[in-house]
Image 1 (tube, rainbow, N blue to C red):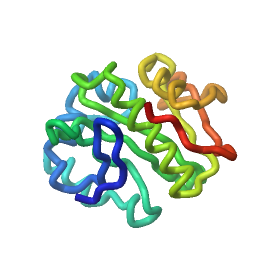
Image 2 (image 1 turned 90 degrees about the horizontal axis):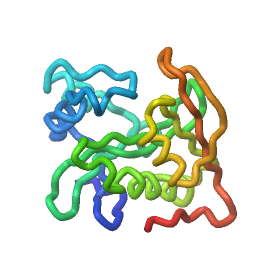
Image 3 (image 1 turned 60 degrees about the vertical axis):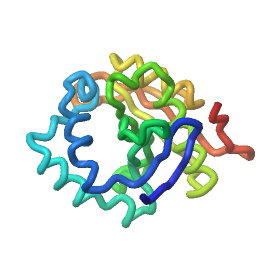
Length: 175
């Protein structure tokens, strides 16, 4: 297991092809992908192919990470940072199975990812995006300490942009 981070309730590790079924199942839920602009994978093989061709770790040293529940060892979703070369920015993203919504997992892991970005990767700014109607995701961005920047077009839907910048004391409270 390529463990990257540990929070109170979760391990975050690199995604791998063994996650294909869970990755497929996560994106197969229309509510999970409702505000993402992503289409569900057609097959588990398509999810596996995506994971085989996911090169963020090799290119940048970080990416989206599998979130594993410490108690059950279950894949409950993913959270992490992604560098977009075309925009020259790092964004925070997360996606969880619905049964883990509203339990604090997204906020817990998102805060850990921001902390990791500032303290381990020496990033200076991390952004977050969400569709305006995705109230839950916006709430997570706000709980991480991100501040509203403005609106943008999110796959032909109104979106909001948030950011957090490294301060002299960049440690994020993971409680």
